[in-house]
Image (tube, rainbow, N blue to C red; front, side, top):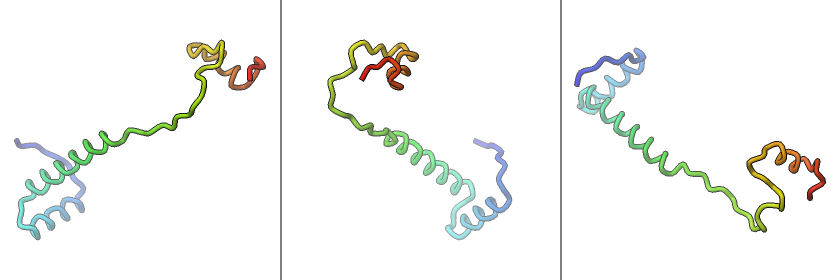
Length: 83
């Protein structure tokens, strides 16, 4: 497929120089670079899951409603005297 891309002049010059040194075409160099970038991006997305710490406990405090953010804020600021 034929397409047009705009590249920084210095980057294009370096890419052409590298392609000439390695004996490949500029097209092949760009295709390989894109394939490498895309495969790295797929791998990092799969392994980017964060591990969250877990703690033992008895669950929620009595009377805590996770759907009520105002009450949760009051509890966290200990305005209701809940400990």
